[in-house]
Length: 374
Image (tube, rainbow, N blue to C red):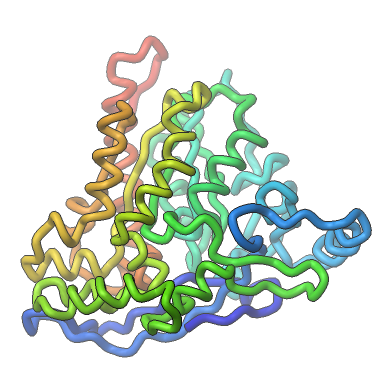
């Protein structure tokens, strides 16, 4: 269950905090209570952004711009995005500093191709680094590790999906020649819009699709979520797969094959056919429940069904693909690895930085550019 708050440091968080005692299958792990997380997102209803009148737009922009604690601004194509050239409080924290440059990218540095190869990270709250200071998220850690050999930029925004991430790139970043673009995929990215924003009421609300699925809970509330219930029952009937049944509906939806077919058609084919994304690398991040299932000897073909679907698509369309699961699986599971079902902790971000640093080293090993990856 999740609910929206007003803007500012209260922000929004997808998922639920995991206690230190997490209990799951095979008697090896024990599920403790999950604390409800809060989200504030400016997303739109249905499958497209709702168009508003000039008067509504002006009123909304004035309200958002006049609020120094609100790090988001209205965007009629994306629904919302981070305010450019803005300083505020990082989403999900009480006092951590949030800064953006003129393009709305995290940090204050401006992209300059002449300085070093440009590396871009596209993602949602996982790569934005909800609940963590900026210097602990993996884009910052990666920049510190590669030094002046690369310039790393983070275009992530909490609450976005793959749909919005690609649209943001096309609208605001495609004029630059990016040497590497890492698209971070999380399980709930198969949902086009999770949240909407009602400009008349000035309040965020769950999208109709998410409401029909029972929201961010694990409860069946309508016919639309019956398939999720079937999948959840299947997981509960297997001790090894049991951890997967505790995932909320927005994550569990990644196991619905029809959803994948639509996701490939609507979003992934755009990636495969875009000549501006020739240096794209798709990076899949698992949920903590997937790791727990795998540690309990769950069949990988079932536990990692979403990653296998994505990997197959990338292979067919010759898109480089990285599954971070094996790397994260080597780490001890706890709040330092994951803060909740999907959001990485400090250790998780360091692992991600190492994965990308290793990948950059391979990609630029034979590059004509004078690059040395530490």
